[in-house]
Structures are given as structure tokens and as C-alpha cells.
Length: 326
Image 1 (cartoon, rainbow, N blue to C red):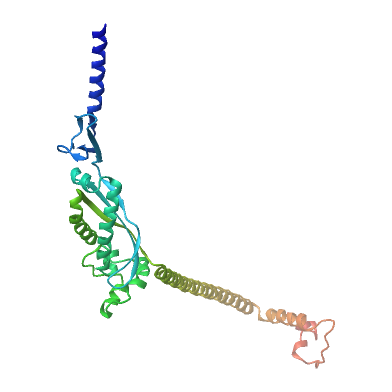
Image 2: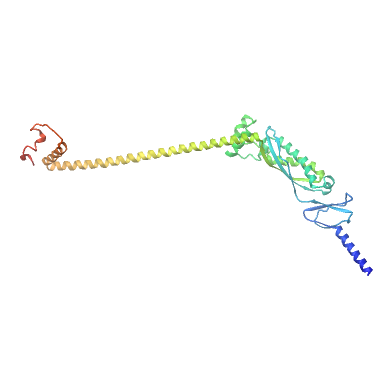
């Protein structure tokens, strides 16, 4: 009975020791084993099951995947003395976990080291180049809106022969933003190697103008937008006047054509009427004269008309006697 109990105790002890001595490493981790604070053996980088001396050796886990560093945005002057706010970020990883453990110990302390090294590198890079080199990456010609946005900034302190090209959206980019960030990475990496850290990438997340410059830029943008809007309005008014002029011209043309056609028709009608009258007059001139005289009587004489004429007046010749009637 005592032997059975002893065996159970031994098995439990073996199980506890085995459990305490075993540890696992997954794909995103790497482990440094220490004994009384000193590194023992090589770092465990490959995933799998490993063993250590229980209660004496300790497994220190560090991430193996990419980690993020986010810098504090700050006001930095460029080479052409323009102050801008720069916000940068970086991606880094632990390449030598032993150095990392011996120098910084954990990722929180590593963030402080990155602040001390990358932030000055960003500042040095920005202050070494003009603003357009920091903001732009290619010589692409800016469109109208972008020219309006940058004209207020970039046309200050440029050479007279370059000012017109800047106003037209053409910039002579020698380095560019991408090369500047690569230079930041190259400058920071040698200082981070003693800590077992590799900077994989550094980027400028955001570039913003100072408050004073922003107000000036926004004011210039508003003025240019108003100028463009006024240009569109004036062009619209000119086009409207042109359309109205064309309408008036077409209306007068149509009216004159209609008047000419009407006059032609009226002239042809009057000619036809005159011809008919002439034909009728030629058939019986005396009857025609009699009819026209009656029309004159009807128009000239009424109940309120008074006329004093001689009896031998030609107008009364049809009233003198019936022998003169046709």
C-alpha cells in the first residue's frame, strides 16, 4: 500500500516537473531562456515544444511579427524656413532577441528608444530639404485646384525664374518624399542595431501647415475659388447674351422674311385686283364711272354734310337727268 502511494507521488511529481519544464512557441513569438537573469542557450525562434529546467530557468517571450511605432506630431522648419507639422510612423521588428532582452528588456522600453532615435532622424531629414521635396514625390504637373492650394506656400522664397513654373504647377523635385523617408530609415537603423531592432519602414503619415499658413492658404483658396466662380458666371452671362442676340437676330430675320412674303402676296393681290378693275372698266367704262361716283356720293354725303356746288359741277352730272344714266 505504501509502495503504491509512493508511486503515485512520484508520478505526480514527474508530471508537475514535466509540466513546469515544457513551454511552447508559436509562429508569432520568439523566446529567450534565462537562468538567474542570465541568458542560457540560443533563442527559440522556430515554433514548437521546448523544455527548460523548471523553477530555475525562465522563458521570456518577445513578438516576432512586425510592430508599430507612432511618432508624436511636431512643428518642424523646412530648409526654406517654412514651419510644418509632421506626423510620422514606422514598422519595426526584433531581429536579435538576446540583444533586445539585454538592452531594452521589453517592447514598452523599446518604444522609448525608437522615440529617441526616429524622431530626431525625421526632424533632421525635414530640415534638410525644401517644403516641396517633403510634400511631393514626383514632378507630376498639378491641376488647377492643387495649384491654388500650394501657390501661396511654394511661391515664397523661390527664384524669379522658377516662380512662374511653380504657379503653373510644375516643380523640380530632386529627392522627393519617398527618398527622404528612405534616408530617415538609413539614418535610424545603425543606432537601433545594438538593441536587436530592425526598422522595416518609415513613412510620413501627415504633413500639415501651421495655423498662420493654413489661414493664408485657405484665404487664398477661397479667393481663387471665387475668382473661378466669377469667371464661370461672366462666361455664362456672355453665352446667355450671345444666345439672346442670336434669338433676336433670328426673330428679326423671321419677321422680315414674313413681312416680305406678306408684302409680296399683298402686292400680287393688289395687282390682281387692279387687273380685274381694269378689265371691268374696259368692258363698260361708263358703268364703272357711274359706280365709282355712287361710292363717292356715299362717302362724301350724309345727313350732317353740307356742300355748296354749282349745278354744272361734274359730280352732279348723274343727278341732272336720267338720260345720262347708263
